[in-house]
Length: 134
Image (cartoon, rainbow, N blue to C red; front, side, top):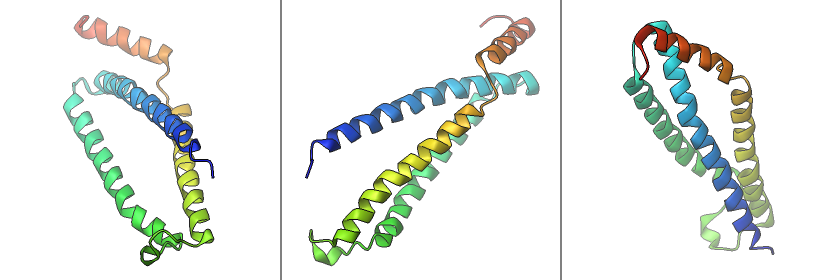
């Protein structure tokens, strides 16, 4: 009944995704520096290859789960556009609830992230004292 709301929802999803994507790069750099402080090794390649693999695994699991989620809504492909009201409602519920759960979990993880700007300044100072400025 309100098709323009999809543009609003897509904009919010894109904004949120871009924010978390930006944070990922910054957090990865902090984790790599903290790892160097304790291990005395630079292992960016290992960290980024693991992150890439985990991202691909997540996309594969999401694509695979979509069929099960669609089946749980009562969707019937044979109906060709004339789905039941219950099925349409459940699709809307899952399209809202699953991303919200993911965002809440991500925000909890971010709130618990132990590397604050102050801690990173200490780590950076120790690394620069050990090996010089880069």
